Image: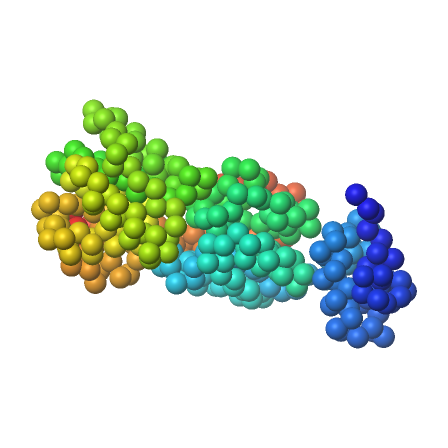
Length: 334
């Protein structure tokens, strides 16, 4: 691989080597537009061992980047105020980015945050992220990285999560206690750890109660777009499979399952019980209201941001894995 030098950057930008050097040293004679262009290209090319690494280390902004799949999801809406409260106490502000569950957007936004010399990153990964080079880059820059809600075994950093296995186990056990024996499960993306953990919790609850797992009523609902969710639910409903309950990976899937079931004249919960995850506020507006697993979102936000500053302000820091308790919010759908 070609060594990236000052000359490489100068050639690509059509400026002199001395201009590049002075830009990286924040010389007052260099225009801000030129300085920004030099920094951004240097970031893209990973030019950092010498001058840039030193400059980036000492020129971080008073911002913390927060990257989430959907700001409109209740979990993130409720977590953000907790993050902001902690950041403001330290004199920092949040830069909030939304990936729409797109890996490509996530990579671009992480790059943009690093280019703006953000002091830390709190991330809930997109559902389509399977390559983690951009996260490793954050760590190479010595920028604190905290994952929350969605875990990633391949990345060693601080994390704030719930016990998704236990949450799904308890939700499934509730359905079994109510007399349900044919419990369908809509699982999320196969590679997403929270999806795997929820499926494992569901499977273990069935096993512990002596109920065989029926693969015909375990369905993949990896795409959270409306049309894809409706298609996955309709496929189950039209399959002829026998089921008396549904546990869904997310409230979005569970809500559509409830709506589509009622359109077919299926009585909820008499004929079909439904439970979701995330406790979206709109669950209360459904008829009947939807039972859901609730996560302590505000507390998750506070903990995640506290870990950012703990790492930022410490010369010797051990990564922490914080697991908070979830709870079932009981309503009329089961």
